[in-house]
Image: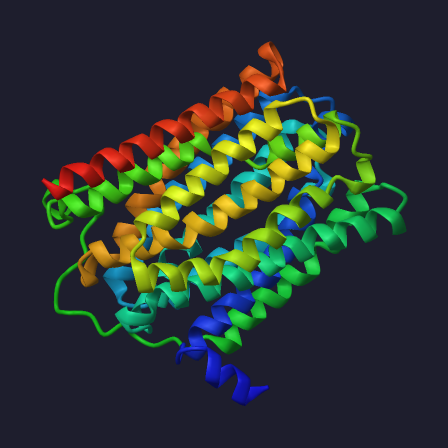
Length: 398
């Protein structure tokens, strides 16, 4: 097994592998909850789809604002581990709150804590991958971490299906089980990640909203931010995929199958997409990812039943594999090394605020114009994003 790994993989740091395993266990914990949460809100608690969009959007925006300041702090102190540990600790702490929630506002509170945790860990974690990885294999490193992360993201919903059968569709009981893999993730951070100081130049990282610091990030970085914003507007919360499948007749106990299919495709594609970008650039995989998203939205907007819906869900996972790791790679390449954590934070702030707008719009369209309108709008935004990338490509050749 070891010889096979050495023959087929570049020399990726143990830290990257450990971060991947941490992400995997936390995703198992989180996705057990998230695979059922949209239906817990709408079926058990009687919440409207528009409010589901608001809750999801606020949660993701909160995560992104936290990412911005966690990146700054990790740059300032030169250590990534403390923020990573705090972030995963809050994620584990939030899980019992979902089981105890009696209405939509307590769910929002639990999501708020969970997403603050995600925000605190995200930017320093991605920056740590860049810190310990040579530039020529960075795409593979991000792809590997993302692939392990996504293994957990489909293993969690798969576990949720079995737990729903064991607990006779009692979603609160399932939420309690989600506590344990979260605790494993925290222990891996404590004992498996070295608390080394980053070897950065003697450049101070300042508060990330100061204009003079933003000037150190060039036009190429801001172009990446713009691309990320357009991608996010086209790809709203995956909660709407779960609601769509349930709307088309998928039983409550099998609702997590939506995320199993999406994340299986995602995990299989993330590492090859990173390797493809290392060898041939990022533009073609990004455009292919947008094409996948447009076709996914066509299937999801059509009335082809569960077969068409799951075809769209699989294509959605393909889109994520082709785009997510590559955007992180572009941020790392375009940001000055001493401000890399802050750069990831700014990128995630912009895309998180956009996720709030996208999720609210998707929920309102769902309630007032139907599910098809939600996915037609998503496909339209994806098409606009593709046109902008092509226009930028043509402009760069002049």
